[in-house]
Image 1: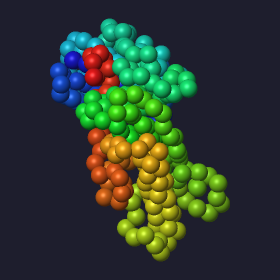
Image 2 (image 1 turned 90 degrees about the vertical axis):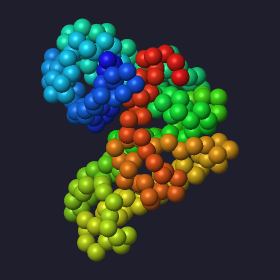
Image 3 (image 1 turned 90 degrees about the horizontal axis):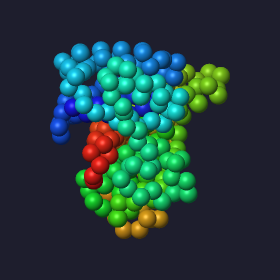
Length: 253
């Protein structure tokens, strides 16, 4: 069994693969104050709650965009599972990285590119709705060409709250109507449709810049919210990142 851990800015997403099957998955809060012991005990608890014997876990891989937590999580895996976790980097991600400095590219973005290319084998735009929303271009040859980073809808909501005197903090959800008839609904409409315009506008420009007809692949917790409203995003894969980590661990696309 393989344990894959995607350390993001807001959450750590963990998946347990039994062969080709994702047997279990969990999401825990990212907390840089937690120690290796705390994360180790959390891992043991999650495995036990899902009926998985820790001895069944024979491998582990970590993708991290939070350097302060990388060592703690790897330490937890070593101390509590007896495994040396492989760390995803631009050097072992199985695809060429064509950016100015490949070491700057987030591991999650590389992993997503690998997973999407493994399935579609064509040029791609991968959109990941996380704390930030990222748009990554993969060439027809399976090369990571670069991308775009923009604020996620949650960041926009928090900024609107923190920089105004009277506006409340609202949850980023799809509004029931375009025109709000109260403050909260007006804010929700502005956040959602402003974000939707950003997403479709960037994708449209990337398609034009890339040429051809790249496949649009979406992932991330908020991806389902835009399906049915976006001109370009019609489906999403919740476990794209975990799948990409498994592919990298196995060493072949």
